[in-house]
Image (cartoon, rainbow, N blue to C red):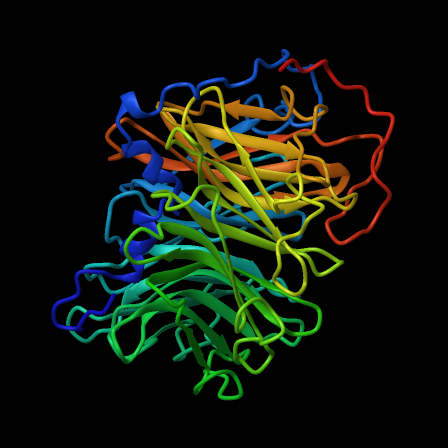
Length: 485
């Protein structure tokens, strides 16, 4: 699909929402479309203090809700920051450009040493399409990088927005234009937005999202900055890489870095005609060009159903074995949204050891339609996907064994959900030692006009440490409930 800057029927930001890559997209689904999936398996009751159950030592019985004064806020990203967590996000209301951050102690309380009482608000230029902070990463020196979408200061044009903060929440004035922020044009159309960010070992910053190329095609976009915020001209074309997914519109929503310097982007490709929506992965070399040893010219795609109308990846993680795991929105045979995982071998082909040989896993929730927004890889190969399910929406988690089957020791036969307020949706998560999970997102009223950051912490396995980067033997000997169906 093509568009001109003056009359754009499509934008990268709208693609993310259309593809269901915002957990809040589920909340607008009609109640009649989110009935319990046909044939959903019965589940056993959860075990008290079991793997995947709420940790009552965190916040109020395992959950925390933090409002921002005068702002309907929601967290969109989460990162470990020293001995606590930092969450970033923007307003639930459309086109709010301000970056919002909050830093939490390990027990869920706000860290009053950070910003103002634990919270930071960074204003950006308001313009149609602005979306506040969408991604956050922590540098080795504990400085915080947040990215999103904001106005370029030239009419209605929008671009990749960056802000870097000192560990105490103050803007780092050594970054960008001297005020700690930068908004960069990406692509020629002035219609680009960043969705995720990662920091390389050398301090260079990689942000990904969506943009339009010179022909007006909606494409995957990646930008790499030097540590001081200037574009890294050794990457792509002057610091920017644009990747067209042949056949239709596309936008990236997540990034992961490989130890060899390669960059993996994940997102949605929307094919023309009856192709439907696909989970898509792109791998770039350290120089910012598509890696020809991966998939087809650096691109790999997957679908749960032929010609499906719902689908797309929202997160990606690379294992120590270089296999690439995507999580996002899938579609079951009845046409309902569901958690989906796709795992690729290092060459971009489907992993035959995952999902019964297909490389794909689809998980329904008894509560109704669901969407995976984040994926975590445990040191022993098990997986946790985090997102939202049901209507009204609630936090949803699913635990998997290394082959993609549901982990019977996790939650209630592999699944767990948490209602926080009138509605809630998890959009990010981190994995802690011993396998504990902290999820972050939003809690809001039924009109989405008021809301706040929401966090929840879930038990891991206290008997063995689980670090994300470790490789360990599969867990054995864990007591698990009997799961029927």
